[in-house]
Image 1 (cartoon, rainbow, N blue to C red):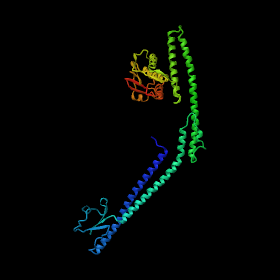
Image 2 (tube, rainbow, N blue to C red; image 1 turned 120 degrees about the horizontal axis):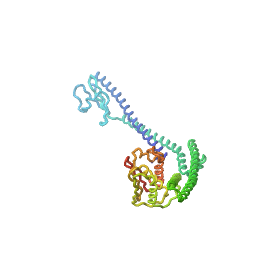
Image 3 (cartoon, helix red, strand yellow; image 1 turned 180 degrees about the vertical axis):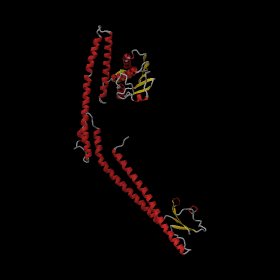
Image 4 (tube, helix red, strand yellow; image 1 turned 45 degrees about the horizontal axis):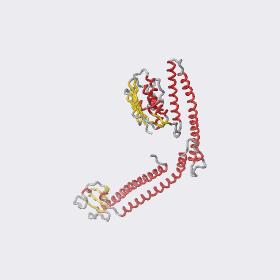
Length: 424
């Protein structure tokens, strides 16, 4: 789920503060360790130089001892047992041992080896506390600056959110462009927000004009396209009633009538798809089996001369309340494809309470063809004259509109199974 812009800005600033704080903390720790190491190394080198100088003057010069430093000397004789065994083999230089809360400095010279053991003192504690105080102060400063920056950004983004909320409530058929006019915008709207509002007003005007043209086209097409088809249907009825018409003429007239009915169903489907979703098409209660028998009869001419049997299996066909022409177009396209691509075998139409299944023993489709079967104008075999590649695309769009999803299952050489599910 996408987050709002305000929340995204807040998250960005929180992450910015956390990352900055962690980087500063890590940098302060590393820098403190480096400074401590350099200072202690220089200090203990000076301490060792002083000791060996005094030792050269007086062989009995004692080892330096303080409240935070203890010394051990190895001149080839017996070592103090208080010196840990693992320290005796350390290389020259400073060695920090955090697990023991101590630091050893080893100075190796021809005269012998001197070991200095250091424990944390007041100076190191003061340095540590100062570093922590600086760290906390820097993190607090980052937090305050981030919060102030967030508040400023939120104030700058608020007009955009207000604009989005207003536009989201628009009716595309009649958008209220006055709601985002220059005088209606929030006072703190910047130049960019005002430019965006002007662009949205222009877009709203173009969308309103487009919707009006589409509505006018749908209304005009609904009338103008049906009128000539009605004339064709009436004329063919009269010609078929003429007893003097030859059998060949009657067959041709019957084909014209079937084509006219098909065209009426397709026009109705296109008009339904062209209408807006909230405008319900004319619906009625009908028996699915009536549609199935009608469409099976309609494809019989496509199977003439082919050794193909068509069977209908009724497992409880339901009654639906919807535009019957929609199911006519959907099932007619599926049966038409099955008839065109099946040269021998059988076509089975299985009707159940939750859907219709059309099975054929045709040429089938491979995975690539099956994946593009619903694409507009796609034809798996361009050499065939039948079809324009729009049938399955229309079937899918009608199914999505009325809640009747369509699925295809196919295998080359074994046929295709198409299903329409009544899930709405």
